[in-house]
Image (tube, rainbow, N blue to C red):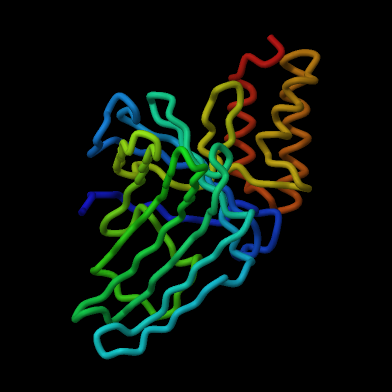
Length: 264
């Protein structure tokens, strides 16, 4: 399946640490339905969240050395990998809802059956004896020539040739099977929100709290609108001094705070 996509670069979320893929990263994603066996069950759009841990080593590694397949496949598992989705119909699936096993995988095969293949996914599989569920983000690119080393940091979902979100569900009692495929329309770290205003600034973490959480606390404790703006100024000045946000990002956040209705 080929799905037309735009380019989106997966960047580090935790900017309070050295700018390298060495921490837990959160992202949000959206999608639009392209194919399903049950439209009323799954709905015509999807949104979700996930986490990736770039610090852990692969749980499984396979090297391909045959003439028609040269490269590497790696797989990562663990509690720090999650994927959760909610569709426009209210259907829920993923790590938090269903438990099960969550894993990420990357195949980087510069030589594959006369061509090339770069394939990556983040998936959660669960089976409670009544329902079997699978949800995954997956991307495939046969035009990309990789370096033969399977690295999670190389995954750039919206830049790949084919990218989609896939959900399937089987009811063991009725044997009913349903699925849905969504074009991935957005993927990346979440943005800072202030009073419903999307600032467009990536939500970073400082001292174990996200910027959005810190701003929410300021909003909850503000005695007036002016007090809220002053407290936001103090916070963003400290974050800018620490190198967590840039001067431009501070300016954007301050504008959003001033335009908000917090404390009014």
